[in-house]
Length: 155
Image (cartoon, rainbow, N blue to C red; front, side, top):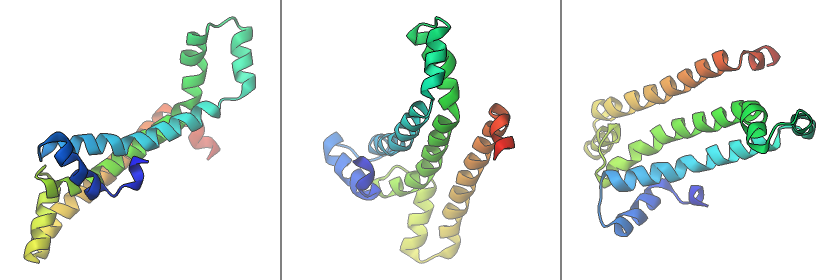
C-alpha cells in the first residue's frame, strides 16, 4: 500500500509525523519503498520451491529450521536477490527526491538546476545518480552471475 503513495507525498506525510525534515524522514521513506520488492520476491521465491523438494527434505529427516536454511532459502535466493536489486535501484531514484525535504545528496543539485534553469547543474546531479543506479545494477548482475551460475546457463 505504501508504494501507491507518491514518494514526494510520503516524504511530506513523514515530516509532521516525525516533527523534523531532512535525513530521518528520507531514510524511513526509502526503507518503506524498499520493502515491497523484497517481500514480494521473497514470497514468490519461497512459494516457488516445489512441494517435492519440501517432502524430500522431510524424508531426509531435516527439521523445519534445517529445511528452511538448507533447502528453501537457497532455492529461493535468486528471486530474493532480484527483489533486493530492484529495491536498491529504486532507492537511488527515490533518494534524489529526498533533497526536496533537506536530505541533500545528488537530488540537491537536480533541484538547484531545475530552480535556476541551469542544465549544467541539473546534469551534475542527474548523471551521477543515474551512474550510481547503473553501477548498483551491474554489481547485482555480477553477484547473480557468480553466485548462481546455473541460472545463467539456463537463461
